[in-house]
Image 1 (cartoon, rainbow over the protein chains, first blue to last red):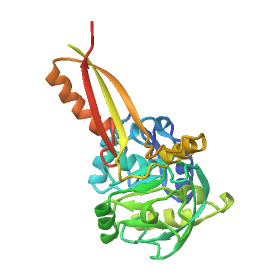
Image 2: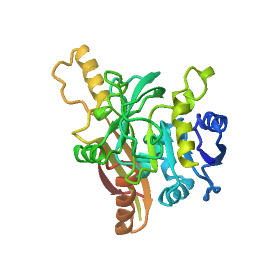
Image 3: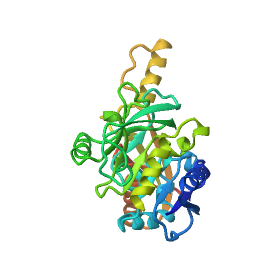
Image 4: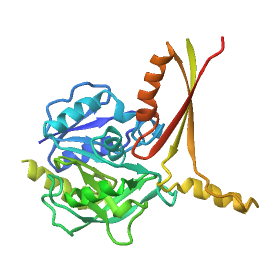
Length: 221
Length: 84
């Protein structure tokens, strides 16, 4: 199963993502942001980091870089697109996902492991998981407060597009309705603040990320 | 013709601005007890060239979509002819 991990200037989890995906059985490669075409791939990953130094807004410049036209086309053609942390911010800025990610409510950069609850199994990313299942995944961000207007939040919940919530009392950033990850209307674009690739091997202190990514590999196979 | 645009971007009033809240608290600590409603924002200045209608069209296109994110921010701008 092929995966393309997009590297923007300031991405810093692209190598981690490639390593974790290859470790779990994907065949992953990096793709530079200036490319206008993607290689043939079964999965696109927008990794974490601080693209363009978070200038203007987090993810704003990366969302308007050449490769994103190809990423949008791939998403439209049904290729799953996974945005992690800064990748989630790029997805909202590019319009592939609704809402926005704002400065954490407590103004702290949070770097910890949080408990996530699987809120929906309606997408390829969560199909192998169970609704209500808890995953322990690392977060590391300063701008992770998910915001959308009430009508959008109601729609996301009504359509089963909230993939992950922070478990009770474990919301690290003030995200509305404890939202940690959402999908688009087709279910093949997922943005999430926590880092599954940082919990993909026991030696890294956790394997719940591997659970999710291996599940995705299985669903795609 | 040459123009200077001044673009003001601010969080929509309905959106929590924790930076503004922290600044307000700090001002209170400094004795400015009557200060209320501190909100943060950004100002951009942009030089543009062309006839006024074309410049306004361009500005309209990028101010509301690139300089500001319409999901979370409001934007206003002023356009002034640059002297010289």
